[in-house]
Length: 330
Ligand code: NAI
Image (tube, rainbow, N blue to C red):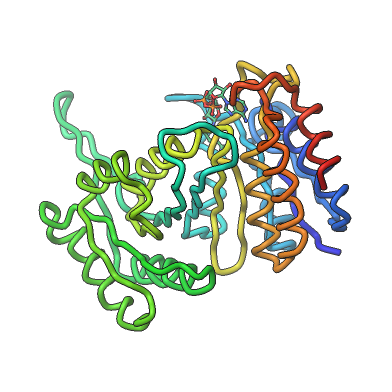
């Protein structure tokens, strides 16, 4: 029996969480879910979108599945996602991008993994207003953070039978900061002779990704490039409804879909639970439940292959109908 924290989020979060819990339960795997609410809906009662009880639960269980939470733009509280990453030092953002059966996209042979540094770069939040007409943002790159993200990428490659880790920078222009990222990658790579090395500039990468994505395997990037490139890669495999992700640290790991809380379809039984389900499948592999992960993945792929889809993928199934078909395919 595993103890896992479930942040059921807001917007479509509770609907897709229900779906995923139901599917995992039907697979026969026993999980003791510690369900924790967070986000907009808890602010009124508890005064914060991320109460300590949520962090305490994740620290205790070491592992969490998280549905999306709403963050107001340009005002209100700080993003729960950013707070979680900082508080738990979840330094690696992992986004596997692989084509799904019967989900139409421009390319049918995408199978790559984006490993994004999650703690520094321009996201360090060091900004300065010089005048009404000038503002500065400081890009922080440290050897320590770069070393651990590059090690993470190479270790992931070894563990998952990947062949190549490609580092992505703009070191021709940012010679010191991206230069340090590149140098550190080269040093770390020496300990992994079995994995192929490759270096590419981020602008060239973007062009190559939209022309020939199958040439890439594992990509490791500083925070900002990682953020942008991982959304580009989500687009390559069918968009938000199917893009999974994870935030991983030394102590804890939080698995979550890339998409947000989709307030426009909240409570309508329309949301696609696939991205959260794929995040949960990756989570099961992380806790070494490979058989259950494979079993659920097969049922999901069978469902999609038979043309059973939610509206965002051109189908006509509701969240609950789609969930029930996956369960019957287990
Ligand atoms: P969004 O991802 O919530 O929605 C964009 C569009 O995609 C909408 O039309 C929505 O209906 C659709 N969509 C998203 N997920 C879907 C799913 N599973 N099934 C079917 N359709 C889906 O992005 P948006 O509207 O920019 O953000 C809404 C809220 O979510 C904001 O408050 C934002 O800050 C928050 N957000 C939270 C994230 C998280 O908790 N990890 C990540 C991204 C955004």
